[in-house]
Every structure is written in C-alpha cells, then in structure tokens.
Image 1 (cartoon, helix red, strand yellow):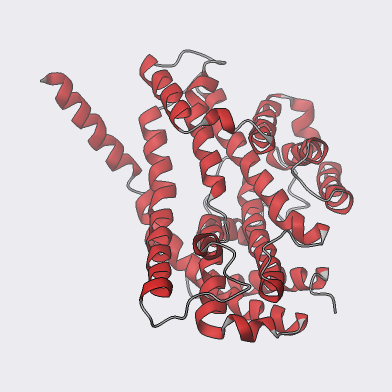
Image 2 (tube, rainbow, N blue to C red):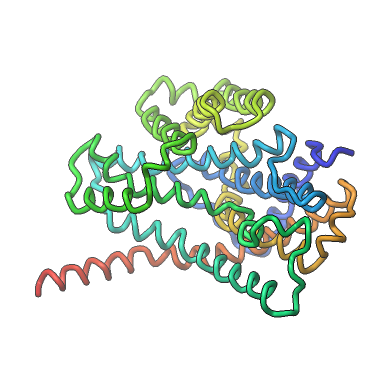
Length: 374
C-alpha cells in the first residue's frame, strides 16, 4: 500500500477524536467559546493535520535523508493549507478587535502581554529542551552522532519539524496592528511608534509574500461580518457545502497552497467558516472545540515527539525498514502520547500563564504610573 494513501490520514484523525472523547471522561478539557465557535472547532483539525503532514515527511526522510514536501497533494495541503488558514484565523480574530475598537478601545498593553503569555512559555520550554537534546547528541558521548544520510538536516529543524518559522509571521502581524487600527480610528502615538520600530527591527520588509497575504484573507473575513447577506448565507447548509467544496477543490487541483489562486479560494472558504459555516454542526460541536483548545501544544510538541520517538526510542535504522502499514501503525501509537502531552501542556503551562494576563498588565501599568509620578 502507498504510504501516502488517504486512509492513513483519516484513520489517525478518527483515532484522535476517539481518544480525546475517552480522555475527557477522566480529564476536564473545557471548550472556551471564542469570537467564532466554528473557528474554535476548526483549529484542532488544523493542528492535527500538521502532525500528519510532518509524519509523512518523516517517512520519506528516514528512507532517503531528504526532508521534502510529500509527493501527494493531500499530505502537502495538510501542512500548507493548515498554515495558511492559521494565518487567516489570526488576521480574522485580531482585525475583529480593531473593528470593535470603534466602540471599545483596545487596551494595547494588555493585548501584547496576552500574546507574550500565550506564545512564549511553551515556545521557550520547547527551545530549552531542544538545546538539551542537541547537546546530548553532540557532546555527551551517550548518544551517537547523526549518521548519513540523516545528518544533512539541522538538528533544531528536525526536533521542531521546522514549525517555528510561522511564529515570526504571527509576531509581525501583531506588531502591525496599531497601524492597521488607524483605518478605523485614532491610536496613541506611543503604540504607533512601537509598531513601526518593531516592524523595522523584525525585518517586516522581507515578509510581504504569499504568507503575509494570508492575513489579508483573515482581515477580509472580519470585514464580511458587517455584510448581513454574507452572514446569512454562511450559516446555511449551502454555505457549509460551498466552504467544504472549495477546500476539496483546492486539495485536488493545486500542488501547493502557496500561490495566489488557491490562497484566494481558501480565503473564500475561510470567510464562510469564520462567519458561521459550521459544516453541518461539526465545527461548532463541543468535542472539536475542546480539541481546538490544545492547538498550540499539538503544533509545537508533535515535532519533538516524532524526533525523540524515532531517534532515541525506536532508532532511525529500525523505523526506516518499516512498511507503510507498520510505519503508520507506529504513528498511531504515538497519537495518544501526543494528545496526552498536549493536554498536560495546555492545563499545566499554557492555561496558567494565560490566566496571569490581567495581573501582569496591572503590574506594568502600576510600574508605569509609579515612574510617571516620580
């Protein structure tokens, strides 16, 4: 059987939802209702899609030593389309805040504190573990150095599956928000200055590419929330059918999501989903939304899990000899491990830090007011 048979991806997705359903019988995983319930449900599918995408890349890498996009449109889009839609989600959620600032001014300090506490704790934890593992391989003498043909890819890229590049685009978009907010009203000059300085310092001039265009798709979806006809159509069965049909067409017809036409089509599909196309209730159901709460942990932890399992537990040589069915069976065994790790990460690391947003914002404001008083 071809190692890129669609049945493998479908089986893993079904396994993930079944395991999460069982896990929730013992562990409380709340689905927090966000700006759009359909987006909350969509995120879990996206993050798990990236896991399957990188698992398919690992199979070919272990056979040949080449880290390349899988020769399958489905498995390629499980990575590329999901990243594009993640960017659209960010554009939608945060430009919606900009639109709402006409009646409810944005607390810019709180916004940036919340972004730091949302992203940095888990990211820094993964990076510290990555440095430890790399040092273990290179200097300890306990773990053998990487052998040919697997030593052509950097250890950090292998450990993280290369997903951290997307965070750079996310931060550039956050930095640009005060400038974007000028389109609807006034913005304090301090935050405009902050925006311009950070964009220049982060090399924003190099980021105006197809990935940056994905954020525009999210902005367009936010603007369409003001169009009643679009909102009403999105919430019908026809809206769900069109959203799903567009995604299926893109996957079947394009080799990559990183091109203008598939990006435009995905933006249309996303605009339908963001504004109420729930795919007949699938995306707004409680279980997918609970899955969505673990999105960031799944996204950052699947790479380290695959690397540790294949490098230290099973061994590259052994995994490279597996047949497609055997290989995907191993990935199936790793799926509950990933979900358990993600639940622990969300409840023990992500959630506690996110709950400190108000406290840290208040501290910074008190610190600033204290300095102003002196």
